[in-house]
Image (cartoon, rainbow, N blue to C red; front, side, top):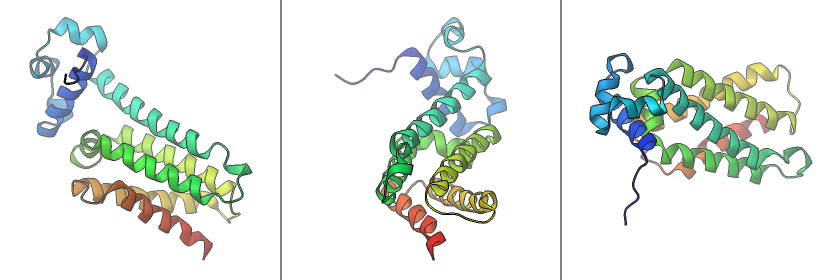
Length: 184
């Protein structure tokens, strides 16, 4: 039997479908309800408004990416060889993005959401600083991390913009190899 979306997931999926066609400011609650084939009261049972819908989706994805980081990098300081943990973290992160590429593509390339981009890059920045602090000592690490995260975001943008033609493991390897360049 095929998996049936619950009402909240149905609303979120319908919202993403609308965002593929319309800008956020053009989308109304009425449009979301029509796309979802639900009543307004059902929408309001889950969300205060379309802003709460978008913010909730953003927070969920950022939280899930943070959890991937925590699962893979929590013991980094005690590991002698940190590469397997970093590689696993990158692989899982880009696999997650690939599995949710509709969301990421819309909010990064089609209708960039500054709030989302800032949260995502902030999360990556924090994660990368944690990895760096456990591996090497750099002068001005904040600038290096800002530069590197900007490059990672550029790779992600290009990959999403082209509809993710490469496997997520290839993209994570590209990012990983660029990170290793600090050890030249």
